[in-house]
Image (cartoon, rainbow, N blue to C red; front, side, top):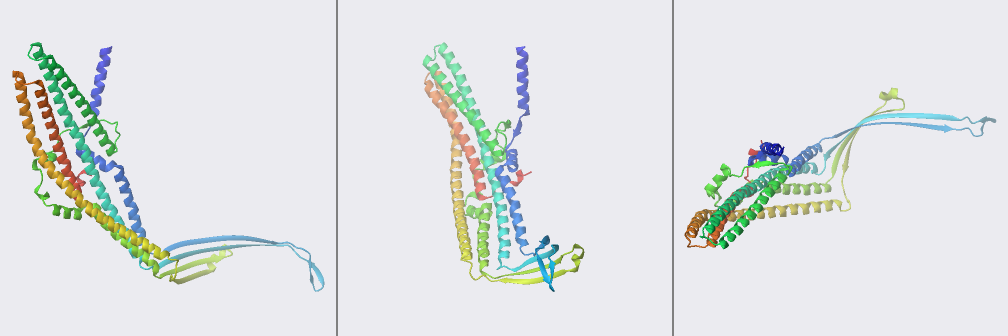
Length: 450
């Protein structure tokens, strides 16, 4: 019975593992571009800005309305006393009167001049719409970069886990060798204990790395908007494009920092958005200043009215008119609106200037870090071979009895550190390469929007 239960348990685990979906970098980015909450909120806001543009154009059109009314009244007069008519007393008779009134009208108002406020409103709403679209594009680039960073962290931890597994296997194998040498009298008991401690440390490092890997997976799933309890299979190898990045190192097109800054100022969506926000704030000043100008409106109506519904078409009225309003004093309210709009325009100008300086800082910092990462990558690649050969030499010397076990453990530790440093250098260089593209505003997202 226990054997059957064990078999069923193993089959269940196998089925669950087979049911796990494979999550690649491209698939992860595609999911983020469809499910990320920030992107969804930004996309919904576009419709609001489009509606504002339509409403701005609507200011040039006349308004049209329909009005209908009905009222009913009743009045009672009760007889009290008499009245004298030609000397004859006549009693007052009680009376009741009712009345009904019906009316209907079509009316229209048309603003002919409002101090050019309508034109400025159209321009402002268009700028706001285009700014929102640019912001949405930048959000998409940000999502691609953040997803890449989180996914690379998963891949890095996966490859680091393999390094820790290999290190544990080496320590386990070395412990068996030392135990056998101790049995033959070629190694001391202290060496056995020392190697057991090294093996235990390797196991602890493996556990820590496994936890880091699981944590990075959950962070990625959370960012993608996926339930963190779902299970996925992650590819822990570099893609062809990643290999090309490591192969080519720093491209020649990234050598001129001034050219990179100019490129960013032309292509960064957030910078374009800031420029439109500045223009929009200037239009806000024009809208506020229109309050100092006179306004001219036209109005018209066509109405029916009667006290009998059957004769409503017998009494008609047609009216047209113009209304000129010239504000002389409004309690400084217009001046206040103008001042507030000018302040907002200055704030937008400062924000744009700050963004420009920040873009330059981002590019220069990333560029310098990328150059340092390139040099560190070369050094790490060279250290691997040296550390591997050193470990081999120390193992041979220990086998011949001309070296201590501590020297072998130190050499192995250095080799493991060299492998770890290489992984850090590789993934650091890849992430910085993508970050530079992101800071330049050229990180492509459209290929993932399938």
